[in-house]
Length: 117
Image (cartoon, rainbow, N blue to C red):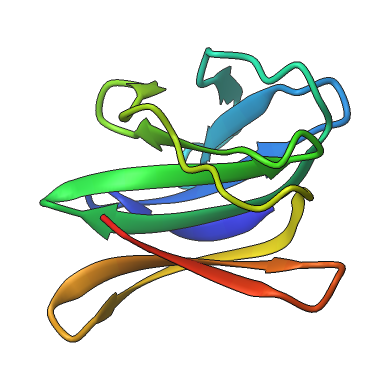
């Protein structure tokens, strides 16, 4: 699970063994998880929330080694995702580094991968 902001609201992102990634609006009296769609066919191992190019994004890494991104304003996949490592990420982060949006992923084999969005 990850907590952040999207469109000025406090939200959480969760991912499950069933491959579903859900958005939770925490400011509502009874938060309801909304599926972001584009279900992953493998277990979600890690999630993150951040921004790139003026868009609030959710990221999810799964056992198949892929990292998928969603635009939180539309709840649709944002781009084709990120690939590279052969193993699934155990941790994800997104930040601004030298004026570029950077995604980092940590893997059980001790490697750290970075992508510039």
